[in-house]
Image (tube, rainbow, N blue to C red):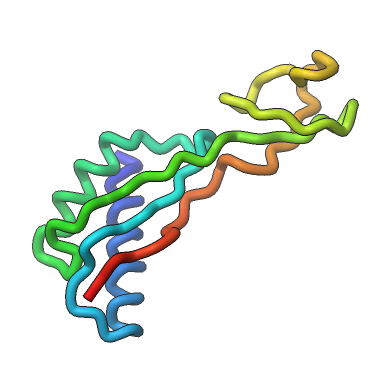
Length: 114
């Protein structure tokens, strides 16, 4: 159900941007979502299709770009790719020392519109 709120916020941003730039139709939305953002992509796509039915983004295609999780170890200062928050450092093996630097974000990268 969290994805419904995300889809509604996404549409609000799209509509504000469309008004600001005098757009009449949004065809494609490129959305960057971090692997650590806890977003179920299938649910987000479903809710996006539902809530955009009577909007400027009606029938817009939602393109999702996954952003890998990345963290820096506070123990050895090395960076590594991560798939979850609770991993050991892949370099030194320390637990609870990873500081996430990428992968939690969700943002609109680009819109294709008329």
